[in-house]
Amino acid sequence: MIAVRNRQPITIPRQDPHMVDLIARNATRLESVVRFTDVLLLYAMGVIADALLLPSGSTLMSATHTAILYFCCTLAVVVFPQFALYSSWRGRSLVLTAGNALLAIAVILTAGVLFGLMIRQLGELSLTWLGTWLALTLFSFVLYRWALDGALSGLRQQGIHNKRVIIVGYGSTGQELHQRAQAQRWTGYQVVAAYVGSDRLAIDAPIETLTALDEIPDAVERHRVHEVWITLPLAETVQLQRLHTLLGNTLVDIRWVPDVTAASLLTHRTVEFLGMPVVELNHPASTGTPGILKDIFDRVFAALVLILLSPLFIAIALAIRIDSPGPILFRQPRLGLNGRRFQVLKFRSMRVHQEAGRITQATRDDPRITSIGRFLRRTSLDELPQFFNVLMGDMSVVGPRPHALPHNDLYKDKLAMYMQRHRVKPGITGWAQINGHRGETDTDEKMAHRVQFDLYYIQHWSFWMDLKIILWTAFKGWTSQNAY
Image (cartoon, helix red, strand yellow):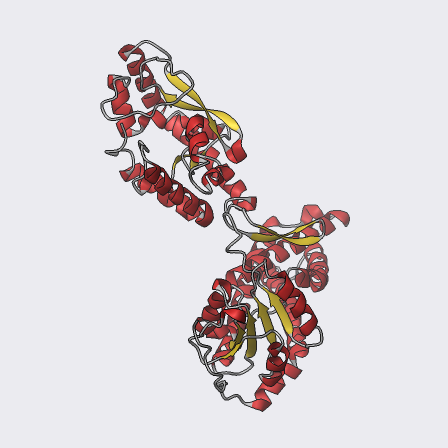
């Protein structure tokens, strides 16, 4: 049993009480100034955009542009708050703020176009002016927010207007939050205590260690805490209910960051379902809008490959026809997205043969492989017809390689989370393949390593990761000693 660290005095950075009180008491006024400045920037950028595009000798904005400008500025007062532009910026990415600002401005300008249509002056509306207005406004917004956030971050790093925090639950999630708060001092969060429960963990930081839930309200008052971060695992429902009672009368912000690492299968996200927040525990990273963009890229890329490599397709087809009797293409059922069956396409690399209810993987010097087939398999050219599968939407350019159905039946009972590979579309190439896990999987260990890389890809997917895999495959991944 690890001994509990003795409670130590909390070292709080010296702050100017007058400055802290000034910022806290005037938070509403400061927000009002920011809101007014946002509308002023929207108006000013509209005027500047019009001035840049006015014909020489003209000094007046057209009546249509003037009406739309006033309409959009009035609408901005209502729309901007709906895109979280005035919620707390602590811990938020400037990229996220810029994205929200872009959406808000786009909504406002779209409404301005509709307004122009309603007043039947759309013919006098310059789309160039709208585009310039959008670009200038977004640039000024980001620059303004960057300067303001930089000023506030500088004050927080000096210990001014920091927020003291208690973390309830010091598992992996609680420890990660603590480390991030320490590393990102510009966010202005200072952890002063942590509840570790019956685990009695020693915390390597000068903060108070709490071992009983009943100690939390006193600690909140003693340290003048601003926020409580709850990171208890989902299984700790009894403690969560107790916390609800204990914190019911505390005037602090409470954030719940549920520790779902033990329950999460792939990745997780919080969504609204039937009007309630729900945590999805096996949510692949490549779904939603990113998934749509990935699908568009896949189909465009596949179409270009099929067009550019059509002479190679014809040459391979003729070589297969001359080399041995049988069809040019080999078709075999595989599992696709969410277990849906499809027919995977390959250039035939083996002599026509029958296997009674089983699939035998190709081995080194396999007598079933034809002469041209050996070359196709070693160079992976036999996989090229799968770009037709991508074009039809059954596969992706990058993803876990689809296995034969008997292999799925075999390994789903042997390897934990094996079937989670089918939560995304299978790919022509993948993270496992560029890391050396391609070809025959004649042992459970080899398959386990491949599945491990496939799950890593699903959990950490990004568009740039796909591009890296495609480039690596194009330059180094076509041949392998394990492919035969």
